Amino acid sequence: MSEELTTAAELFDAIGAGYEEAFGRRPVVDAAVRELIEVLPPSARVLDIGSGTGRPAAAELVAAGHRVTGIDVSAEMVRIAREQVPGAEFVRADVREWETAPGSWDAVCAFFSFVQLSRAETERVLGRIAGWLAPGGRFALVTVPADIEDVPIEFLGHSIRVTSFPVDALVERVHAAGLEVTGTREETFEPETPGTEPEEHVLISARKPG
Image (cartoon, rainbow, N blue to C red; front, side, top):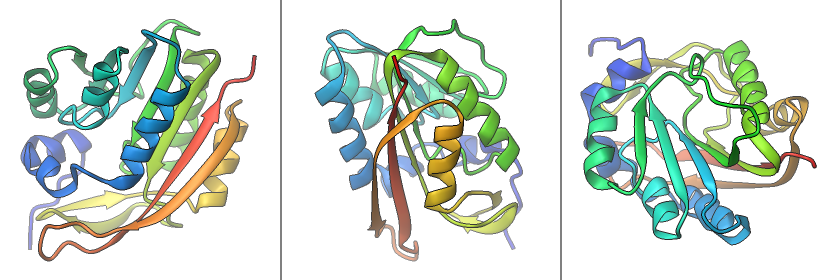
């Protein structure tokens, strides 16, 4: 039995570059990044929550001319991202505690960043994100939708506990945070890594009114 890693920092410090090898090109993330690039103004300020290795999201947003800051709880992920995407800024930080000025971001993206948060923490973070966005700012949320709470799973050789919501409940919580949901996209992703099970993914796109 593998050792249980209780925090996201422990998990992603342990996985490092192996995460990108297993999950680096997920079509739903590519779709989310393309959608942001299509609607953002030039040189937009973009916050990437749970920025991981910096690829593909931060790398492609920087290549499109945007000013990207990534935050991640894993020191190893921040180290890798700084090497791979020198055009962005990466900070080791926990989104539950990180502070930034209200209305200071043109877009926020959170790709698979919430699955190790509790449901109450996810709701609070969504509210914080709404406050950080400028009027008209965009939010892209990608996650694994499921009606689960604190469920133990095996993930890339490590035992962790995960929490999520069904799609409708996620949409409701994004709306309750003060954001207008502009679209959803669901798909099944089949990783190339042998022994890794297919995952259901959802993209929820939203904007801040104003």
